[in-house]
Length: 204
Length: 211
Image (cartoon, rainbow over all chains, first blue to last red):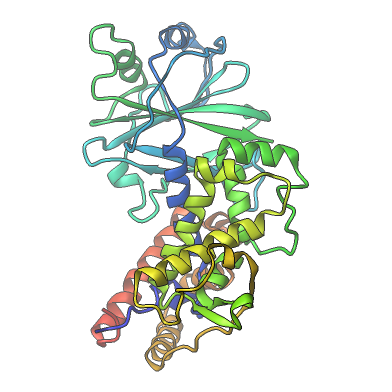
């Protein structure tokens, strides 16, 4: 029987011990599983109505709106798509920092969108990156091993310290922000083809 | 900056907000704790350990890199699960708690397989009092050859790629820090990192050295 060989990352590090790349891969797996165990949000009509009403408040690449905090219902957790974020090493976890994304999904739910709700209710859109843009194709943007997106978010002054709600939306096809809102708000078929997952981010 | 292990075991004890964030399962807190302890966990998993109470009976470490990664990952999955976070009382240092999970995983693995030392009479809590780690296993001849061929392969790479590999793999810097240091985009760092790994794998395979 052939003995397993050291991973390529270890050969490149010159040492037969856990390399930085392996550590990152393990952490990504751990975070994805840990975050998948966190509760997800249910439909948030008030939340989204407020978001639509504030649609004109777009600012730069981020879409900002002021919304009342909404402690609405939560739905069951599960082993479906999930995501987590991590502040880039060596940079502040706040303004001046960079937010890395680790996303796992199923082949069917191949596209990912995300935004944050600040403690004051303000919404910050991450993906799509513009009102006309579309959600990310995970096949093209997520690393095969870690699920890390090749797009990181630069954290500016709009990311004041505090605890943010992160909302990730998985869909089978690319969608604009408008389409995502509509799909979520549709009273007949709420969120058809759309899976919403919530996480949390603490900025300091 | 690369994360490095610290002798400070009280990361969670000295920072109430970190402990609260840890208990919530906050990704930032988990990341900080993970990097604080991952080298210690990996070292234990690699080397195994000796049980004091059993006259030096040894639990061997992971036999290869695949098992090592699997056990390190499983250790943190358990420790960071909701039940694992609840089980940590926040009153004692976290490191022994984490290492106990790793030790128990090693013992479980031996119990599932043909034991290399008898585990029949070991009490359940024995791993709690385990002695310091044993020596690392020596690298095999085949592995040494792999490292040598890799070194030669890297010398033939363009300077920028070689530097990216050095900083990422030898120095253990994050992609962000490497991109800032070299003045290249993070995407470039990632692209080089992936292409060099693929290239090396192909090179080793072509010489019949890699599966």
